[in-house]
Length: 170
Ligand code: AMP
Image (tube, rainbow, N blue to C red):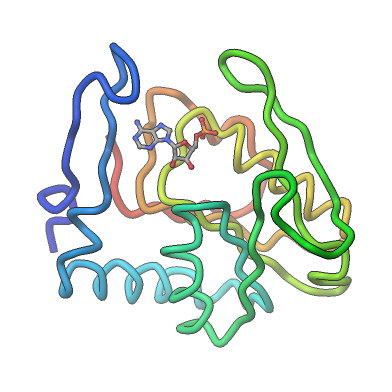
């Protein structure tokens, strides 16, 4: 299936010079969405994961059905102040300033193997920060999965040396 034909390109969003890869057009296509989850699950099945982590908010959309398919649990990583129980927190660099991500401290414990999922890897900052949260929990990072990789930004260079599964490259 040609997933690229289901992903909409929006120039200059959210600011001039950015080509936004819009996955809402993929999500609304029943066959395309099913193919995306099934293919990602197939490619990740050998990683033997106990949990899938998805980052707020588009990581939730792909991470939850993927966890279901892999017979794994789903762990949300959220923006600050959203999770009710005690959290681990990581601060990471953005183009301008910094941002924070949080996960529940008791979300998972060693020897759990965890797969990190997001819709897009751009600079890799978000995924690298999430890997740090996992390290704080002492869990094992089994790999990363991204529907879309923006290869020119070389985000994968920021990530630890584990398998990285991607479905579409720009
Ligand atoms: P980064 O931390 O730079 O790898 O950015 C990853 C996050 O930003 C992902 O959660 C994406 O949803 C979003 N993102 C970055 N660049 C784009 C883009 N060109 N199109 C769509 N989403 C993007």
